[in-house]
Amino acid sequence: MGERAHGKGKVASSILAPGSKTIAEQSNLCYNTLMAKKGARELVALICSSCKSQNYITERNKVNMDTKGKGKLQINKFCKRCKKYTSHKETSKLK
Image (cartoon, helix red, strand yellow):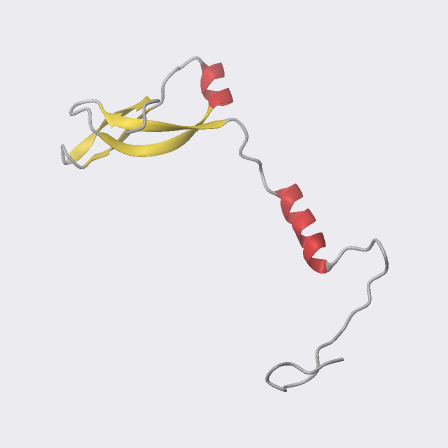
């Protein structure tokens, strides 16, 4: 076929049958079927329980958290303002 811009070898051409998929399309199909979907997730902010500053933004799964009956997410994280590990609670208001 035609030479490359630098003149180093020839470009290989492949003839595909009508309706056949390229290698890239086949690999995308495999990738999409194996990867998990991020369905029912929402963004929530985590605020420090002692100083009330918003330090983190994270995602949570709506389906799992509601069925457990726990309600709001609560994690021990480092607070930059307090300079120690404190309990951080979920809030839906993002600042």
